Length: 338
Image (cartoon, rainbow, N blue to C red; front, side, top):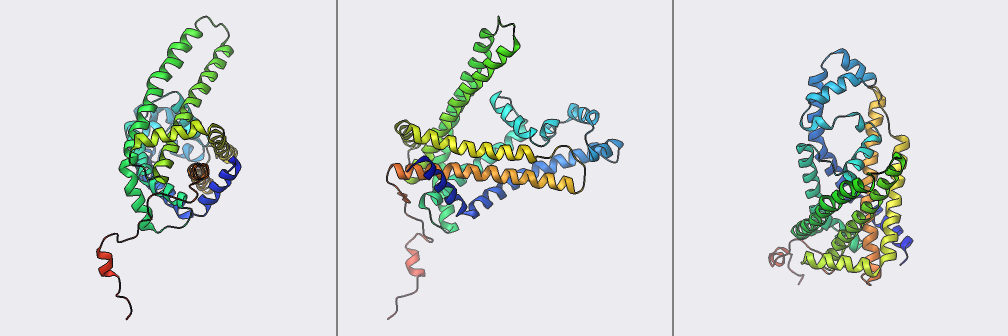
């Protein structure tokens, strides 16, 4: 199977299971809702019926914004001008590459979000691997089967990310960058060097992410119980198939960049209350939906490529769960006709 065939097959598998996309979007919305309501209460308490509220309703009041930022705590610390429109995407990317920490409440919400994905990914990959409709009981049975396995895999993944951000990031951007630019007199040269270091770090980060992705795929398709074995299996698959694995990841990444580019064009800026506010909210939710769709395309296309490379087309080692899975099912079933 070629890279483009795996990509198209991944898109087809995602589009044939719209309930999966709708479910993950709903979960993301529900996880964000408490933080949004909390921030709403903080803004209402700060603005009240003041003149600042009127100016914020029609645009941006930077004086009030600066005053609010000085006394804000928790989720309020994230309410800055960088969250307007496409700036929020750039701010998140900058926070990741610069290894900046977030407020505790945001980190807690992020942890809940990650745990939700760890629970759902088993059912999602199982659905895409079988490439046919499965009932909700079978979907959640797969989620439960792989949850604790993927929880162990998440620990292994966290160790890799920790080493990358704690040691490699520190060495590249603090030790090496400081040593290499100590005699630089042209700021542009230092900037280009930093961009090159971002590329090096980004490639290594993406490589580890690809290893983890294929570890998940192998765990589901081959019903692996050892996550160490699944991780090394994922690494072996990428090493033995470097061109299709890297090419497919780049093609999926290009799709993500396309979604970002479209949102960068249509993302609203600071507007006013009324229809423009609701239009901005709608565009933001469509971007979230598009980003989740791309994430699912990543997994579905990687699953398709793996199955084609190892002759596992539409195959999973684990049998399809059927409720109820117990001897009591025979007692429940109607007696055969005489």
